[in-house]
Amino acid sequence: MIDATRLDLLEAMGVDVYVLRTRAASGASSPSVAATGAASPRLAVVCAHGVRADARLARLFRHLPQALGISADAIDWLEADANDELAAAADAPAYLVFGAAMARSLGAQLSTMQQNTATIAVTADAARLPGDAAGKRALWQTLKPLARRLRTGSAE
Image (tube, rainbow, N blue to C red):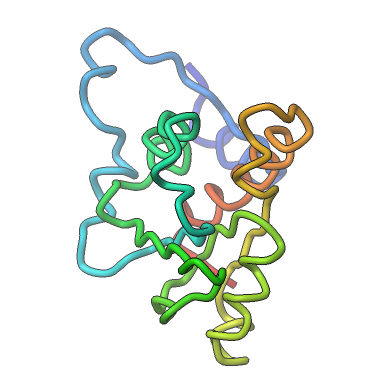
């Protein structure tokens, strides 16, 4: 086991320390997931029309809260209409956007102040993810710092 001083030092250097789960703890949710609550969305996921219904992406979307360390209730899903336009953007401290076209639509909906204060992470288009290794790599490279921001609670 690593002592608290060493953990603080590793955290200051930006190193994620992984701890093996025990069988008893694997069934319980992590403290960060349990502590989020459902008062307001902490993350808004923006995707194109029909993406959430794609069976090839169902597993990804199901495991997204776990990968980010938040509860499923803390995620607000924003799906564009058939013209790739968003009706209204939720006010959230962080946004995960699938595709550059959705990023433009989100940018049109958010005020400048919201854009400056929120963490906005743009990744590959969701339609490319099932068969594109580079798209999957881009997604996971985007999720890691986003999860870190959500875990610390700061969305600068």
